[in-house]
Length: 125
Image 1: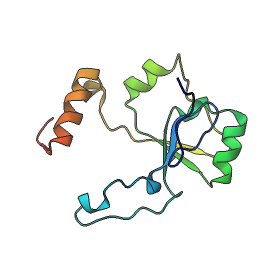
Image 2: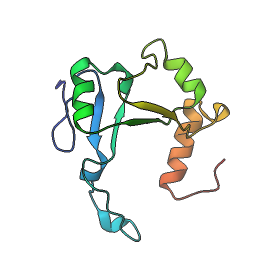
Image 3: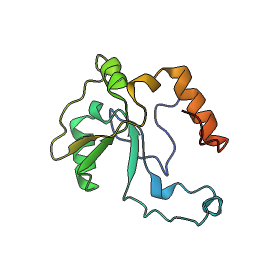
Image 4: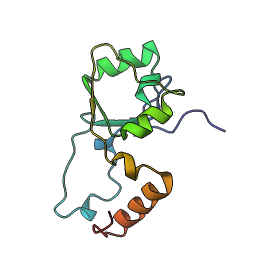
């Protein structure tokens, strides 16, 4: 099995999985109404940036990344801390903006919310 994802839009950074510019990923911009352009290499997303190697951190700095928005709930952050503890990345600020509250983190509940989202049902709580 391949250890790296194809490029683009993926950028191979040691220790960080699924790192990519969301501006370069637009499979069907006409699906948005109205279409919203996102400048390539302006907003990035990844899994577990806190496992970044020193070379990955240098690359992130070269990309002018200064803020990491952590979308995990406090419970999820705590539950994943043994595997990937939150740590300060030099030159970058962490901002916690949980998408789900602690009660809504259970995997089944998250799956249900995502399913409802993709079915355009905004009434799910």
